[in-house]
Length: 598
Image 1 (cartoon, rainbow, N blue to C red):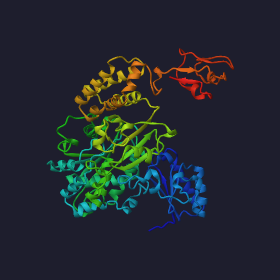
Image 2: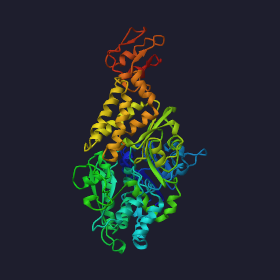
Image 3: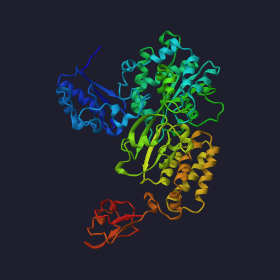
Image 4: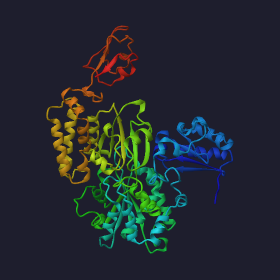
């Protein structure tokens, strides 16, 4: 066994990798070798730490020094000062990790982590995801061993049912019940599928788990295979996730080499293997029956249900399909017990939930919170509030299938039922925060554009209905809205929800319905006043120069790209509305507040 006096953990998830964290790892290795301490200090490339806003992140143990926004040029300082001389480089530390006495706070004391409970993300940012030995050192594959050597198939299903684990992919169906149905189906062949086709705008929860802890998913799929009597699993993962795909392939090869996938696992007589299938970016393939059709080599389109996949799924055989986050909880439930998991969360929503926190928020990143945590706690305590002290307007959860939650519901406990009650949904876990500068009509239009573009086209309500809704929204944001348009939107939305073939079509109108419910005044301002209150919709904007504030400096005319501003130096300038393209460059450059937009 190798022992090191220090370990340097470097985030190599997608976010930090885009800022050259792999180059930082290489530079650390070069600096350690140059100073002859490569055998004393271990560099550990990890998955996401969660606090993406501060990346690239480097944490040095045993001190727990949280270095943020690290660049290549910073590496030599960390090596020469911290690793050689034992002096922490204070100016590179994440500011909130420094206590008043200049000591280092543990991560649990930092506001971003203080209210989190990491279960699905427990190993992300902790272990090297490409080293199976590190996963095993953190109790990896113990849950599978326990299932195969101590528990019957019914015992496993009973534990999952008692835990209260519900599907984290959006539907929230009880996981244990799904497994029970598949076990009860008589068939010579059964399958276990993992949905890693994360397609919601702003969502990166599953990607981070796969990049940071791929073995947790493999182990859970093997447990599920044992529970239902399956010998083959498939992970359907987005091809746009190259790091996740690479690490999954490495993990599968390592698990096979260790005998943890393949034949006669733990000498139990149980055999199970896993293969990857890459998706090509079709949002509809996140729907379970479309996903299975794609694995079969067919066009990714939903199938009518019943029969449900637990009876007739992949290749016509009984199949269970869970998403990445759902599987990431399974091993810990088996090891710690159903009561442990059920002790977290609310009465009907047990455990924790991972959210990708983005948009107008200071602490962009990945968070895992106990169910029942309020939206206010997530945004203002974990997320650090809105940048520039802007006013919170709404949070969009559930992606294109979800809705917008207004400020009046900031104190609602987040769980499956509460979000549905206020017109949104949990979805897979995207949470996009909006402030007063966001136009809610334009937000609804953005998500509907996505849905229209991603509709598989199989059923008319989704294929045609969503396009008609988008045409109405475009008409409204272009300043051509008329009396009766809102009623048409609502009628279309309700019909699409009732008649669409799959869950994606049925939930496509949610962003429109929720914004109509809570921000109807913005729609009415667009239609009746031909005005966008947030100043976003260009067709409804006009720029004016206030004569009493204009100093005649000519800066506005110099930056105007189309020559729409005229006047004489030290005189009053004017904007020709017929030429103005409403880019806002003049307003940004004016130092005297003489240009307004309304």
